[in-house]
Amino acid sequence: MTQVRDFQVRRDALREHRLVTAALPEVGSGEVLMSVDVFALTANNVTYAVAGDMMNYWDFFPAEENFGRVPVWGFGNVVQSNAEGIEVGERFYGYFPMSSHLLVAPTRLGPGGFTDGVAHRQHLNRVYNNYQRVSADPGYDPARETEQMLLRPLFTTSFLIDDFLTDNDCFGARQVLLTSASSKTSLGLAHLLQGRDGVEVVGLTSAANRDFCVGLGCYDRVVTYPDLESLDGDVPSVVVDMAGDAPLRARIHRHFGAALKHDCMVGVTHWEAPPEQAELPGPKPTMFFAPSQIQKRAADWGPGGFEQRVGAAWTEFLGSSSNWFEVRREQGPEAVATRWLEAVENRLPPTCGQLLSL
Image: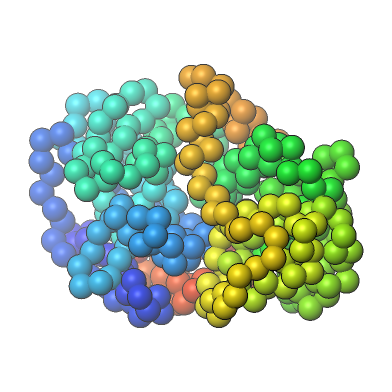
């Protein structure tokens, strides 16, 4: 390919998109050009776009004219290298734009990979700036790249939420409610919460996704959104909210009232729901920011401690996730545009593992 292709979306109107092409960039001293071989598309990427300004996600891969490049997780191959220690043909896993290429400036280069030192990323969390060299990753399996792209970033978030709840003794709750129960982050968290003494895991989902959630067996109970009020409102509860649906949140707060011990906001799969209109009873919704929990545990557990623990949990989780979805891999701007609109409109079925490339 002799050109860079960038799929860009309008930051204040996510359905509006465009394809921008340009000549391949010159690779300067210390720089590396990677081709973006394949990336996963999930509801999590819509969250990146919806929270792009608030959480600085648009800053990773800037664009012009109020457009942005949505971050995705995937694999890239080195096609040009002027950085010592990185060879053409090497394969890396990490945070990419929905593009055909990415120019990086590797720093902190080691056997396991590097950190992108490009100037515009220096104020951003290093967790998202790291690229793993697959040849040195003990958890890498070329036969499981699909799961790594689709599930590992979301499972890491699930692990951190589970750890956060453990760290706070589940806020004294006997019930954990997970909205968007069919989302991959909710499913990973439900898997981790299974078997916790004295805590029931309840998945909240649409009628269309109820059977899917029930069939996985990771929830103690699955309740559709219209039936929310059938739950006992006096049971001390925590909600982990992947939906970001303000009317749904209001119903949860009003139903449980003082019995709601914590409202952990994570995702915005229902990002077009009307905004909140009034102050809610119960605890104030609190945004969960995964990098903060990573930093805390890195300090608590010492060098390599976090990676060891999440790696062990990930390996165990893989054994239960192989039959969750069917992989759909497509290539080209039209396919990317079509699937992006499906994701924005929450029409990606939970049984689909969507992989794309430009």
